Length: 268
Image (tube, rainbow, N blue to C red):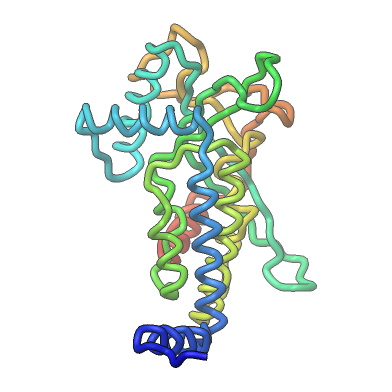
């Protein structure tokens, strides 16, 4: 048997060193989450890709920017106006939900919180097998990334949130997968940082922002009669796959709601 050459010997040494490297458990788990998130974000259907490009192109061409809810809502109205002029069934929806959580185990007192959120929804032809003319909803969120930001966070969770897009276009199913994964990583991050997870950071609560059963039409519900200057007050009930979406109510005072909002901002 011949002796090893210098290149062969060097390769053997490198292979041995690399095989001896032990990846810490938390780094391995973080890498797995990043790979999974990347796969979900990359698994866009043709309609999702098309609508995402339309939104981004419109924002670029019009040089639109926004800070705060009022400016974002104005941009959403412009986008919906453009979609509807192009023949799409597009609307701005406001979700409103009233959730109750046990403050501590065995305690009869409940912590109640009510929140509202707005996003764009476009109905498109379903890409599922079969040509039965069925429609599915695409959710367009212009401020998706910021919904998951925390003031204190681990490096692993920071890597996860940096991967999230600001403008997110997705089917309900793909959105649920992203939210569930990120909220799971959020929980781990807050635990490692010694922070208790508030109710509004749970997966169920975060998903409520986009669930159809919580939604009301803000603008664009009547095709051909919508104006981008419509203030959308009051809204209306809309049919969804889970029945009629009705706005929920809560007996909290305005002071409590403001306190809730302040706490949520501090957690970000």
